[in-house]
Image (cartoon, rainbow, N blue to C red; front, top):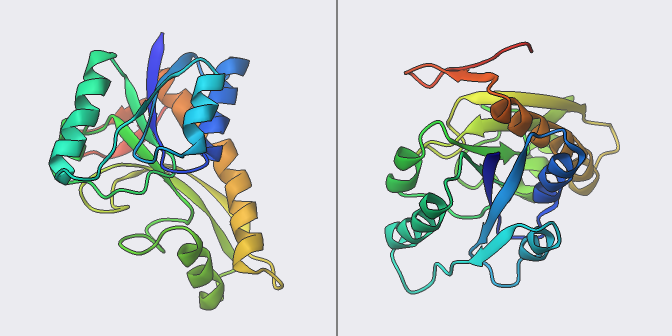
Length: 207
């Protein structure tokens, strides 16, 4: 069984898309572990409901690396194959991306490399897209590296930016795309269809 860990800090709608895809058989695997740094994250409740083990690992009062090592110990103990960041609002030290190189992915609500990097999260992204006058936006699933939003893209999905869009309406449209793309990419990993070169370039077989 392909074992997935999901890190989430908030409500966990992207997590839910993975849980549902595992339940339906789209993903031949299981979300074995959900970790949050937020005690009140609804993502933990979503994980419990679907039979995942859930852990609250507080980041407060410790260094970033100490927090990452605590998460890593939990991940290693459960023989996790893939780590998915789904609304996880922490920036890593060198330790975590290095340890899980090519085994950790993130979903970003824009068509990277545009609108990525420090400060480009949440509504900030959609505000920037609308201000730019771009005619399309979307989401990107990418490998996680130390450079924020800098890892190679595994998959993207585009959506139109409509003339009367607000950041909120655009966010809702992009989120719908996230809920299709993220489980699809996890499926590719679980089925062994993602090939990553020594330089971390990504090739997806059959796509």
